[in-house]
Image (cartoon, rainbow, N blue to C red):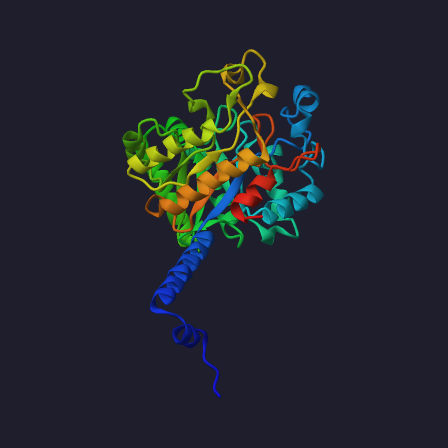
Length: 371
């Protein structure tokens, strides 16, 4: 006798009601699988951990041992980069978003700057195919970019875009800037920035790429104005680095409960919704900059958050994932989201397994992989 297929068996033995329930369950299963495939969440990677910058101070090393990675404080080595790639990929992360710097004092050697060393290690890692990557161009008083720098820099970025592991939106490489406001200062006007971005996209197409997706890190306090300004500058997406300093919670002894960052995130993401632009939402996992506070800098005036654990990471990553799934009209087709951060040890947000046995990636894995 010829065997019946699955559908024929169901039709033969099931009641109309049970068959409909089966179809509903099958639809939910397929839909959830599609959602799971549509989310790509990665983490910002800050490279201050090669032993040759000021970031690893004694206060951090000796007063905050729980932040020390299982591999030791010096992680910018080929061996440790490979282990970090494995750890991130096994937890369900899709990419590293490397902070990228253009040193003011040594422009010609920017590819070998100490703060860009980890990116080079990733690019040469034998297991880099496990994890995609992109960059965030960080601009501050020590790292400035002007019109005279633009041709060389855009060419360098285009070379990065050609790497098959580079993160894309709609097939186009995505690059983030922190932020368009800083570019407006050095380029002199909105129009100058817009022209620079247009030339960037044109050069990418001349190099055989489909174009470039430009994202700017903003604080959407006034979403309508921010959206208009960013779009006028030629940007395609809004995003964020860390929004912890936006908190309206009063500083209390022991710090503000870290779960308040989820409430703050929902406010930030709602701001994106009210703007005229799509977004790449970011989740600030934690913030406690006391290791870098010296009584003079801004860290001394910023509040800290307490209760940072794998459980809090799970809640935070789940909140980001669920928001992306529920708001596809405001995000990228690929469902891309950023986590702050993989290794911001000085600012109190890290995902690397700690030398004390606590692994924050347990929370990430549970939220993204379900284990």
